[in-house]
Structure formats: C-alpha cells, structure tokens
Length: 294
Image (cartoon, rainbow, N blue to C red; front, top):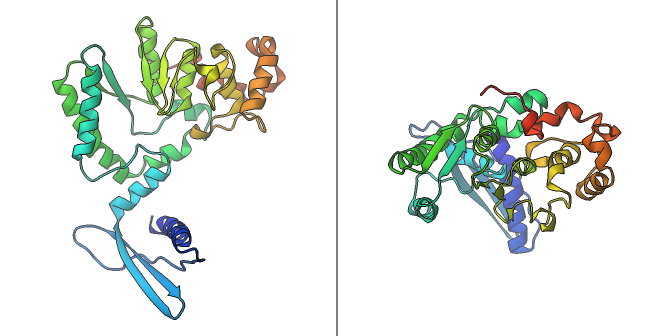
C-alpha cells in the first residue's frame, strides 16, 4: 500500500509545487517509516526542496487508514470519507430525509461484497471496484461510520429503508421496480448502468448533474440521441468505462449513436453482424433477460 501511495504523493505534490512556484520540481523517494507505533500504522513522506542557494526537507506522516481512503476517492468513491459522522454529513442526510420522507419512501441499496452475477458474464466487469472492496479497512469504515448510522435512522423512520443486496444493487432495484411498476421511481446514482432500466420502465435517474428520463435523454450531454428502448444495445456496443466493459472496439458515443439509428431493424432482430462479438454479454444490459434466483 505504501508503494502505491508513494507514486500518488510524488506525482501530485510535484505537480502542485510546479503550479505554485512556476518551477520544475522532482520528488525522488517516499520511504515508509520503519518504527513501531501502538496506535496506528503510518506512512512517512520525506520531501526535499532544492532552491537557489538553499535546500530543505519536509517530513510528514499519513495514517495508513487515511491512506486507504485516498485510494478509494481516486477510484470514484462516495466523496470525502471522514473519521466520523460530523455535523455536515448528518445535516445533509437529515435535510434529504426530511424533504421527501412524508410523501415518499427512501430506499438505500448497498452491497460491499463482490458483484458476481455480471462478472460471471464478463470477467472484467467492475474489476477495480471488486478489488477495492477486498480492502478490509475501506469496508470496515463504510460499515462503521455510514451503514450503521443509516441503519439506526431506518429503525426510527418508517419510510426510510436500508437494503442489503445479495449482488449488484441494480439487480435488486430492477426486481423491486418490476414488482410495483406503476409507482414513480427516482434512482440516484452516477452509474450509467441504471439507464438501462429506462428501456423497461418509465423511471427518472439523477446522476449528480442531470435528472434523466425518457423525455430528456436525447437533450443531455454525454447521453445518446436514440430511442430509450435502444439503451441496452447502446451500452452493449459502446461499452461502459465506469464498469470496465469495453464493448465493440473503436465505437464511441457518436459512432454508436449513428449506427443504432441507421440499423434499428437488424439490431432488434439480433441479425446485425456488429452484435456477434458482444452478444454473449447482452444480459448485463438486457436486465429482463437476466436469470437470477428470486
């Protein structure tokens, strides 16, 4: 872990110094501290500053627990992970719940274990994410400071539920929508995989920037100008970087969008030659065809 972090420290600190000082800089080494501490493990970073006529060294220590959170954030985690539930986090959760709880049900779906259903179909699916959650420090922190607090809140609030999923949360969410399709659903997630649900049900998705639904889909940046029913085909061909699915080589957003709009008939009949190499992975995106135990 220390060696991985050292590369991050060297690159980021060097870049920061260059921007602040308008001078080139180089960090030669970062050495882990070889001492015993009863309370925690630390990473020692020694930085040497060479200026005209003067040199200086800066030594600082980073707790290993904090270091693991750096990695988590850089891999697209949940935001600023802290050592405790401070007032800012508590206020945000309370404000969200109070705004919607009287007239809506709020469900938080989670699974901190490996996603197996999709990786059985496509072995590299969410590989980085799955490796990340093998880190006991990250999982322990999330359970202790986030999941447990949310569970306590759900015990006191009737319409607020914390749902532990057996596999990828999208599977449980899709199944719940399927059981009650006439309800109005808003899914909050940055994962584009959830867009595939729109091909089956008229839901809304807030991705942190836009509220996406069937009507707004073609007007939003970074989303394809296609009929919503073709979204599973779009991601099957285009790929999905966030979840490490490659799709068809050399097919980006515009090229995939154009191909779909020009080949609707051969695509929906599964006769189009472009589907040959990716057809084995179709159940990742065609969620209604996914065979799972209830």
